[in-house]
Length: 464
Image (cartoon, rainbow, N blue to C red; front, side, top):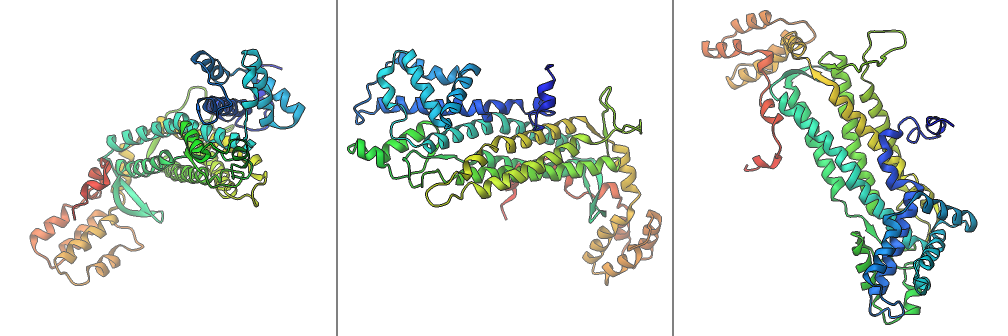
């Protein structure tokens, strides 16, 4: 096969067309990566056993032996993954395959005396839940959060740079009280920042308590060991939050919470992509064409908003998968069923579609520029948006039924500034009030939008 054929023959677009966008996640969620994380858990557990004086039967490792053991996962190679896969084909059990491979490695390292301490009193789920907890935490912290941070930085740039750029707003798709482009971008910045903080704040949990969560094998073999304390200490050594009360499986509640938090962040970005698509359609934003790129197979002029469309589609796919993961994983019949096991293997797919959506949204944001004159021209073409300001000022003055007067003037009919100013001249109000009304202009009727565009702390004005 040519170098391109594996990509062209891939069943999943994440491993095919979009591989370069999400390749970073393969180091966390591929089958080889899962083997590596399981090796890491088994090795760290063995070292932890050897350190515990109350365990007794596991001799301690010296520093060189610990380094050699940790090198098994820190220097984990393709050949190592293939060797474990070969064991898996032989025994048809992926966690046991890791154990058998590790036993071989202990012999090679001259550590055969520790073989029976390997996987001591563990159930496969003790290893798997910790492996998934580690991979998910590290993928979030090292891949997803940096990608979201890049999006936040770009949104902040647009919010600050266009803070005072007046723009016609639309509610129900109709012309409405003007805003600024920067203020609208800051709305998305603040929403995404809150959602990202929620993603980052979730402390993933892990368990180590045996076949049905009772520590039965541990207590039978070593009854004098405080296994509750041991379990908590070991899980915390992996920077996960310990859970003591479980069935055979870790309940996946924090994993579900992370899926829900990611889904909310992705929903914010779908909303952003749809608004930006409309701004491009309305001519408010220009897109920089990429050299050599084709927008349409028949219409040579087209520069389509494909990045935002691609992001919207992939974030939607991610949301569907994340929704299923968060609903399915916390449910397991009685003390254990395997339905979660196969679903967990698609965790990387859900995060892959999320990352792809982040990449494409960022690419789209990097190609757009505000067409300031187009925004101004469109805003000036809709002087009816000043009706709100006029009737509100008249309310202040005690003018009778100003809302009804402006409704009769403006609703469902075209309006010009001249017509509006003629209306003002006929009002029975003082000359200073008329002057105030004459000075109104759509491009200046933006309230505190420019200030809001630069707002970064919503609690700063909580003194009321």
